[in-house]
Length: 560
Image 1 (cartoon, rainbow, N blue to C red):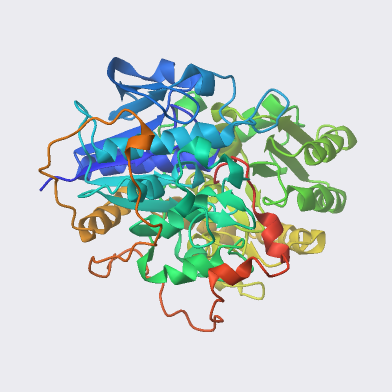
Image 2 (image 1 turned 45 degrees about the vertical axis):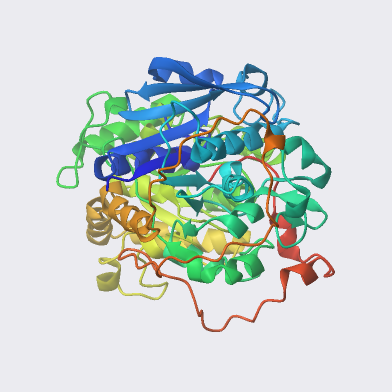
């Protein structure tokens, strides 16, 4: 049987993107559409999507969704070559920004916007006349995490759900009083469902009711079962550990390809011939107002400028590195927390010709950054996967990454005291800790190794030859889908116009009857050694909030 997959997301490049989530979803979509011919993306009809779709047709009117009635449209994204479903409600989605207003604040109706998306997907799973019914609904991150709850509330039969965790620090936390407006039954508002410290938590709901949960790297899958990285949901995750599978992300190796990168204006290069990389370096210096110097070492940063990404630490460590190494230049692109942006702008003024900061994101600049730089600095207090270091590796730019999350799986570093011979097997540098001293020491180490041309060239070859293409990951997702053993429903579809027409059963967490998932490129995370037995979720409300609880964000920033 050919599986019909509906992937529900808030982002997919080039339709909509603010960070790594958009890249991850689109890369997976392209790869899955090859092995799953009936694969469809679903996302809101933002203002920015219209320039990337064709063959737009109205499929159905959805009455009574959170935030008002909406229209379901079918379309095709030519750049991804995948079919798309768009949920149109201009009051909710026709805005300049995807998540944030012009002042950088999250939209006040974020809960309504993404509950509407999730409920529309659940209605499709339930059955809408004229709309193909999927076998699997694959929800990405908190924005779509209510889909499994709604499917449970609607007693959907014959359709199974998958939830992928791209970044559990962003959970979609909103006032519990919003539940009736979102069409969530009262029986789902307790601590065994979506209630979280007196509020509702979209991601917790998804963890409770999804049939299968996937995470985007092996190491992150282990980390999130611990209080340090679980962001307050480690107990729920441990309870679902038998349904938790690690399937590493990939990257789009056609988009990020130094030998055929349209953004580089003909300056292509490869692992065998890096001569044009030197030209890209000069172009990068010219574009950013750095002193043109082929002997300079360019250290780049390209990420959200947030405390998660240790941009606050970089603002303190980089001046020390610039003062210590006159040959060092720094080039930064990104946007994020205003105080951090201001601190980095100050470096731009303090080191003219040696430090350049561009606040904002442009796809073309990101490609020039990786192509022209020598080193990428990618600190992170937690990192589910770490796409950016893999992009840099493709271009022979050696990453310095924190020893957390997916970077532990992808950056090969034999260690600080390794010999030159051992470093020839490496493709980057890892460091522990989150202080300016920790980051400065890592930069010092990288600059010292760069003075060994033979070792550095070997590291570049290792980095550029590593294979992290999505086509290695898609078969693992296909096996995960197949493990859910969906059966197409033969029931006739009955249109339902009002949420109130549906009667919900008590909100008990589902017990999976499927066989244990075995994914060859993933790791089933159960029976982890050395982890304390979690307290019942219902008792967690009585605990004093721990430091990790403060990491939880109701915000909409995507994974990177």
